[in-house]
Amino acid sequence: MPHSTETDPHGFKRRGVLFVLSSPSGAGKSTIARKLLAADEHLQMSVSVTTRPMRPGEVDGVDYHFVDLERFREIANNHEFLEWAHVFNHRYGTLRSTVEEILDSGRDVLFDIDWQGAQQLFQLAGGDVVRVFILPPSFVELRQRLVNRNTDSIEVIDARMSRAAAEVSHWDGYDYVLVNDDVEQCYRSVHTILNAERLKRSRQTGLIGFIRGLMK
Image: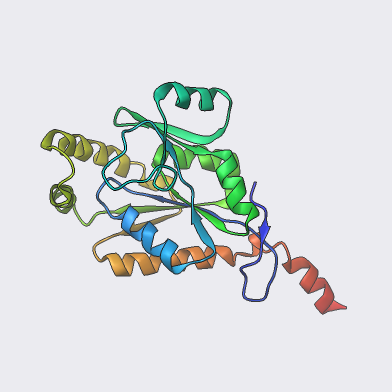
């Protein structure tokens, strides 16, 4: 699926990276995603479609594409999603057209999705997908972060904690696993992973031509 792009320091053509960040709610993936996007002009977020209500401060088309259940099902039935999942009584999906548009622009694609979406994406795009799972330093710390956010009721926090244990059980389905006990250090590690993956020989589609020219 990924098209060639030019962000290699030598200008070699390469295949785009589908870069997945997953974590239990509250473990810090959204903060790290924002820092990546702010620091890296060659990376763009894939904006998901969701059936959940818009929260204060969110913007339709920027944070999510907000739709009702009927519209979501229509999109799914038309096979317009690369992946979709059912989370906390709401649905989330990635539009194929959005991803292709980002790749066509010469950027890599950042996904903030759960293990179900990561698995579906990997089944479709294989080696172009890089999966990073972010762990909290402890479940005690994770719960405190959720409480400190002051956006959810105790009942919702309990549900998120219950789901967190299930999500962590899928850690071995990821290429990289990091512990976010220091958000700056974790961010730097994630960005290092992204840059290293961009330089993988298997993605350097322009390298063969360069080597042929070198050997003449």
